[in-house]
Image (cartoon, rainbow, N blue to C red; front, top):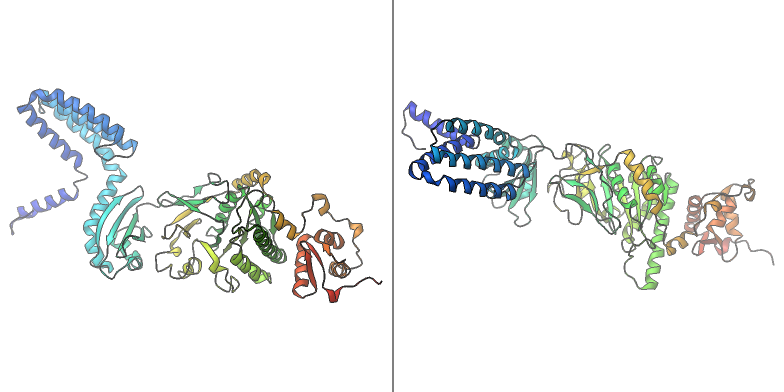
Length: 576
């Protein structure tokens, strides 16, 4: 509006004009009523016989709006009903006013009352208010960009979604999405949003553009309830939770090692529960678990776990057994000329879940080397490792290649900004993976195949009753190890044969001496693991742990799958 200088009236008119334009969305019901009144006055004077055509057109418009949302682009049923009702009132009032005149009672009163009634949903509708906010943000962006250190950037397009709005921004030459990430707190201040409301993603189509999302409300303010397993085979994609846009978080654990990291109370155990609940429903995967907190986290899944280690010795023996499974499967595949192990109920995949991996490395000597070997060689034979820990430093991960072999990275809340790089990979923090801003248990960022943008998600919540129900339901379908793997670890025993007859155990000697005597005096074909269990009175894990120690010291050798004896210099041959 161009006005002359120096007059109070000009200032008043200019101010009123700016206010009318600024609040044009809020005033739309009254503006529409005025335009409808003027249109009725003109048509009544010039074409009063048109009222039947107006009524017929109104019927057609209402049907189209309610059924399709066209021409107002209404995609929700409630919005279409509102649009249809408003169109019906406007059309039929216009037809009546054309017939009798808009100034005849009760036409003006009817128009005013109905306009006010229709205005109430319009004023309170979230999407309309959000569109107004977006429009104002677009107009204010040049000033905001200059203030926050992004001069020259401009908004190319903006759309309103359920939780807020998102805009595609063109940056000044030389700037990238990383520069925008560094200014997120300033952008939140400039736009007047709540802290933590702005998300930034790189535009995959252009390095000089980015996508900025503003969330009016947190879509993950409440936990996401568990709805049941999403897979029936380990080859399927597991659904861990939902992203902020409502899309599912899907990831594959077949032939992919995984790392789950975050501080205490961030929800690592909850993520493990989601993964276990899905894998337990798959009859083509064997689950082993390591929980050095006495089984506190994984014991509820004991009925679905083929093996559960709760002590450092058991954990080290389990990982060494996993390496033997890898070797046995590789040998079987070599004889069959197969390149990959295809999981099935008869030949299942093997997934080892480790809670608090750093405790395992610190307290179980030899476990780190076995885990490293498993992570490097287990891909082709479908034997994978899933580790959870707080800070996966190189030392905490055993100074090996385990961390570098983790294809799936799930990062929950961290205490220090740099920990995001430890879990997700070097440079991820600068790229916008702001794990330190996650503010509730179960919220996470995921880096995996198909997930290369820092999109926040929240894992499903399994309460204790859900865990017990899923464990009881899935226990009957759990498979056993395949033939080559089971043979290499020793033939499985029936429940009755696991109980050692106390009369067969010589209590005058300790188990260590009894085991060594059995190995030294064994025949050429050696003793099987079940036989050694019967002789010593000890369990399978204890036997394997001692056998591995003797083998590392060159005192014992595995003659064939599952059969052991002392090496030749240590054998005691019976006198001729």
